[in-house]
Image (cartoon, rainbow, N blue to C red; front, side, top):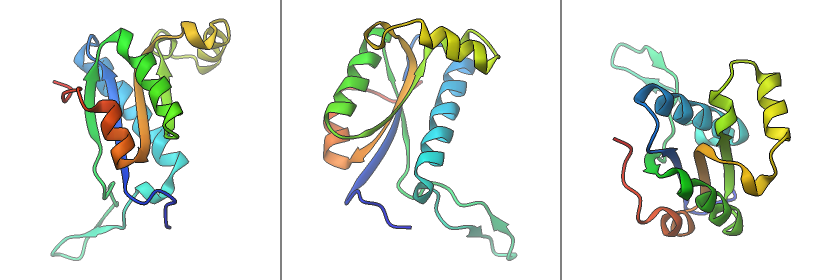
Length: 139
């Protein structure tokens, strides 16, 4: 399937203050949702020398970057302003394992007051690069 983005770039930005397990969870949740929204992000099957097929992976790569708590909302806003597809993961999502409770908790917070454990951006390579230029890889 073709994409409408000429030179796409996909990044996940995770809160640098998270413990490793929570950071991995945030990156996985964001990537899964981005992949569901854009099935073309999944490449064709990988066939090994024995002829065994392995599921396709993202052919354009996906960097997992880190940002501070206060930066994530701004990154989200810049992504929206640049016309990127933005997937955000509000902090309430790691405070419960009940999705209905998660929905209720987010419903109680105005957009400008939400904080995030992570944000994923998909857009033109230059636009995304400009937004994340000063961020390093998640460590």
